[in-house]
Amino acid sequence: GGSYEIPGDNTDPSGLHALWTSSDAGWTSARNQIMANHQVIGFKSCFTILPGLDGATVSQWQAGYLAMRDFFDAHPEKLFVVVTPPPLHRNETNSGEAALARQFASWLAGPYAAGHPNVRCFDLFDRLAQPNDGSATANMLRVAYESGDSHPNAAGYQAAGPALAQFMLDAAFAY
Image 1 (tube, helix red, strand yellow):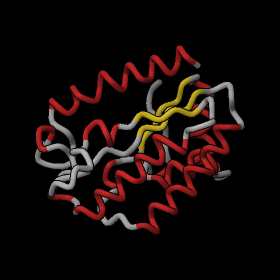
Image 2: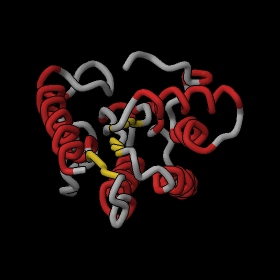
Image 3: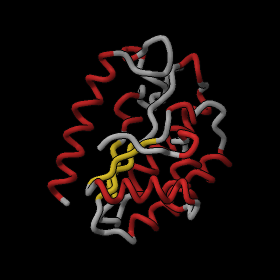
Image 4: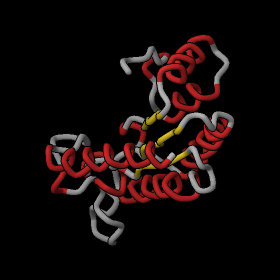
């Protein structure tokens, strides 16, 4: 366990892409430490990636995650658990961005992991987001889980934390 020296503390999709695919010494060192210390590797990008989201960015992220998956496929001895980015607070996004965020999360949770035995996805976005129900807050952090910003409150953590832990255990035991 512990903490790893991720260059620039970059855990947005570009940083995760670099972590799993870059040959740069800083990224390689962090990746090698993670690979040496864990059989099950779970990660998510920072929630702050979502403001200003557009279709071109989603396409870029998808390409990056596909390159990461190529690395995962080359390491069947490890289980990789991708956690979708969580939704944003209604005051930090808009309906178009929120819909794109759900689209990206749904892609990760569905087609991305399908057919790749050592890749699983926990859909944190769906667990915390208002359903895609046509409401003004569709695909945004559920009002019941709001705090002062996009971090969920205690109810949100309770809704997601135990489920994530159980998902990780189940995935590890099944793998």
